[in-house]
Image (cartoon, rainbow, N blue to C red; front, side, top):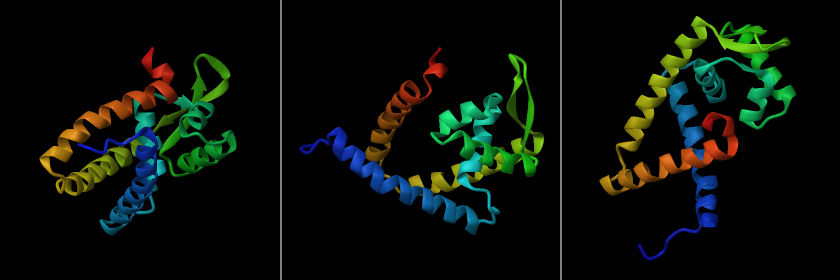
Length: 153
């Protein structure tokens, strides 16, 4: 490959492609009958399946204000997908815990998204799949190191 991308060129390409992928995915979910479950809601529910977190932790992970995270969580609580439980380490804090309804929604949505992406990625060539096989774990490693350093402990 003669023209190797620089980090800057990769950044430009990510900014071009990722929003389009998100829009396509959201549109595809609507077409297959998913209600108004936003990708953000589904992503949060999938995160909460691993373990409960506080609203502050969610705000940090989503890179949003505490007010935005609180508003998001309130909507999930009102839908019955998340419940607030006392934090065993700090009784003044509340942890957000996914409910059985939230687990069912997250699992169904995840299966639907994986099916849509599987069909989408089937158009990639074997060489492109090999490149993705190298790139995605590397991207995950950098994201974890930069934005979720506690996950490495």
